[in-house]
Length: 470
Image (tube, rainbow, N blue to C red; front, side, top):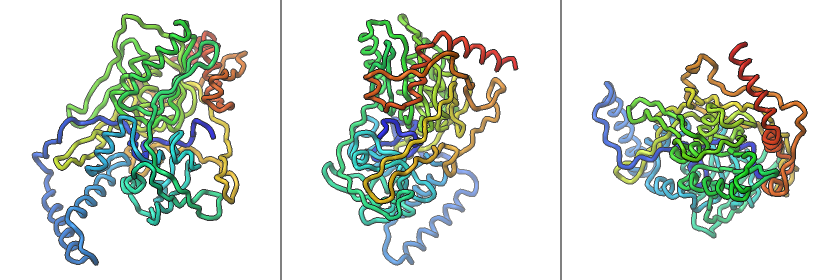
């Protein structure tokens, strides 16, 4: 199975991994001081419904259960990324951002009303059990998932290490439902992986943005530079299928490759939601050639890194259009140790581009070849992977809000550039072949560009000039 899952679309719940662009609030939020006109009349209606349900429902139901359900539904009606976190879920989130947690290691979303697998996380129980992107989870143990919220599904698939959960799966082109028993384990996500490809070309993959990602990236780059005795020829930064994570870590990663300048800024309704983040000027800075790999699973925090490096012309982006999640979720703690995960702002790249529902376009578009997915030794044979799903496909996503960017161009990004003339397709070296599948054409193109960097820079400059003077 490929290390890179091209069907991973971000901004989904992972089992015990909230993969989103997150700012963590430090203290419980203050209560609102004023409510819009008409609010009290609506609250009176809500109180009447609450009383009617408690009086007439077929079984007794607690007020807390009804209130929790109302809050969950209220936030779910806003956009795909706002949610109510019960005390247990909030506690889990705080643990998850540290990169170690218990569960199955599977990313899920709601698609057409069905609980659907986005992708299993590498080397986790779900991955080893053979779960695939686009599998529909019909039942968790004996409970049907129809109309089950993501929060509830996540909760049901959690459990102590060594315990089992049985998932009933519907897979396209497989005639019958089948069950997969998955043994829970402690999931440890290593957010940065690195090696050397060939000809002093380094490779770094960032899988998610958690508390130690920036530090781990710095260590990986130090090792690559040391191994190459400071003569690194180029670097491939792989952000494919990176669903995002913490804002401060996205800033730290981008800062590693920039010598000053803006990285990202956010705009919301409140003053404290309008922030600007900059890279530091460095005493010792080396600007080696760099390619960033992106695809439809590159989302949120990883889009910020890609967008910043593209706007500064620090790196060439190779792959396919990114997911398009240009919003910021703030975790707002409440007095009872629960929390709200609330969309509070849009973020913008240094050149003022909003990525929301649009994404980042590659400088060089390279579509991965269509491949057949291996079957799970069940009737029906192999299943072909589906097209990627992006932010604009999600129900209740909010619009870009930016018809034209500040320079007067389209909100979409990037310029199509033909490959350098005479440049033959390069294949990764032995180390790269172990880390990536042999026919990773996007990685091959990245290596090819770095090997012919001077030729490519000349062609890219001509393309930029043509775009400015059509």
